[in-house]
Image (cartoon, rainbow, N blue to C red; front, side, top):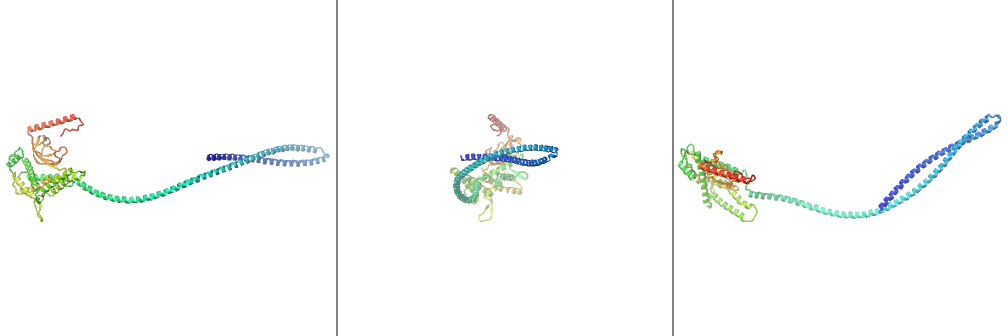
Length: 532
């Protein structure tokens, strides 16, 4: 409300000030005009006075002239007439001057009137000045009251602000202490953080070592550059096959084939074909001899491991290690299945033991034996015994007449025995899952996905296996969909008999019809294939 009152007073004050200024300006202008008119009237009066003085002077002169004329009356009438005319003219001019004086008197009366009005205006101006002074005093008084009230309010606000400021200062001090505490805590936490980072790095290194150890313990993959990697294994098998072919020889040149013994051997393996000097069929003989050599090595190997697994002799460590490691593998596998736990290491231990044991055996198994306390080595008893037996066995079926050639061929026997035993007894067990060998039965249909031989692609449906000279090697060989073949079987084939061919083709046609029927019934989205 005080603010509204002050606003009204200020507005009135402004209005009076404007009106007063307007009146003052108008009064000044009118007063100036009156002064100018009064000045002009004074000038005219002075002028008229001057003219009156001049007329009076002329009148005096006229009187003097008149006196002179009266004195000279006796001298003639003409000068008197002229004087009279001049007097009349002067009187006329006098009248004119009187009119002008009258007008000047009238202007003097107007001046009095204007002066009175000016006095009235001055009185009004004085009245307005008084009112203005009163209003100014009132405004100053109101402003003073307002300032006092504002000062009181400001004092209250100042007290409130001072109180608030003190409160904020207290809060600021509290916050400063809290910030200081937090900074100290932050510094401690920073130190702790760096300590934990260093600790974490150490733990990561330790965990990495554990993880590496765990990974090594649970990783069954063989490195690409390892000799037991399946690619290198395939190359080693190929070299073994070449040695085996060289050991059997081509049977050409300075050789003697014992056909009776060969035919007995062929019959032993249920092969229906016979050979004669006229029709020797050397390719078949070579395949049968390779088959026979490998079968003999396997038979001798199995006998060796079965008879020497518990002899506790350094001469037969391979057999004892295989026996004990197999027992440990089985016990660990049973332990993993019959004890609660979710770790992978326990389950993997039996596999890793199998791999590590067979890696060691594949590297040194059936190598020369070092005598106790001596630097002298001797050929392994198994190799020494069975190389001679193998050479004697081969001489039953073919004779190498060239003694030098014979000795060169017979020197291949130890390597063939050692490498083949290492392959099927040790190296295949390093793979995970363990790899295996599989002989292709006689009269089996040719399957080019797991067999190799000399045939034309168009003749495959009319061929069967006559003898398998080298087994197929791989993983999961009985699982057609998931098997992994390292090396295919080496087979010698023959044409099917007409009856067998018809039966085989009928079976294949029936199978294809069955597949087509299943595909038709199941619709295009069944995913079945015509080929199995």
